[in-house]
Length: 211
Image (cartoon, rainbow, N blue to C red; front, top):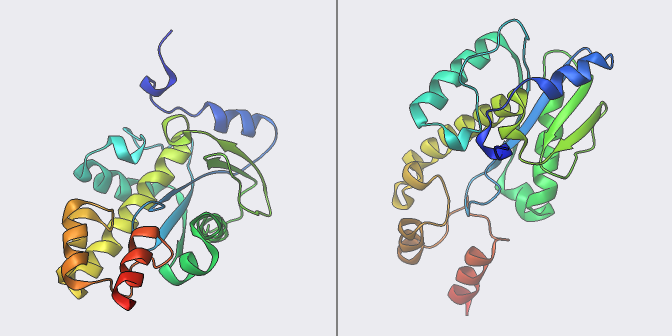
C-alpha cells in the first residue's frame, strides 16, 4: 500500500462533512510558525465543489510560480479569509496561541460563515463552528491545501515587502527563517522590530547585546 504522503489531497474529508449536513466546509492552514521574523499567517478556504483549481497540493510541494498561479485561481473561485498575527502578538502570547488566534481570524474573515472547519495539525482554534483537526492535512484535503497556498503566498509577499523596508536582512530570500544568511545579517545588524524576541536565537542575541 502506498504511503499517505505520496497521495495527492482529495475532497473526501469535505464530502464526508457535506454528507453529514454541513453546508460550508472550510479548510484552514497557516504559514510561518518557525521563522525568526515576521508574522504568522493563517488562511481559511471554502472551495466550490464545481470549480476546484487543478493542481492543489501542500504549498511546500509546489514551486513559487505554481503557488502564485494557484493563489490567483483560488481567490477567483473560492471564499477566502486570512488572519495575520504580528510579531507583537507572537511575543506576548507565544507562537501556538498566536497561530490559533490567526486561524480564528481567518475563519471569521470568510464572506459567509463556515459550518465546519478542517484544521491542519493537531490543535484546534476556538471557533463558532464545529471542526476537526487533520494531521498533515495539507496533503490530504484539497481545502486545506488551498488554505496552505493562500497563507504561504500572503506571508511571502509580506516578507518581500519588509525586505524593501529593511534591506540588511535578506527577507526576500529566506522569508525570516533561520538560514545562514539570516544569521550573518543578524550578527552584523542586530535584530529589527520585526524579529520575534521570544524566539531563543533572537532572545540570546538581545541578551548578549545588553550584557
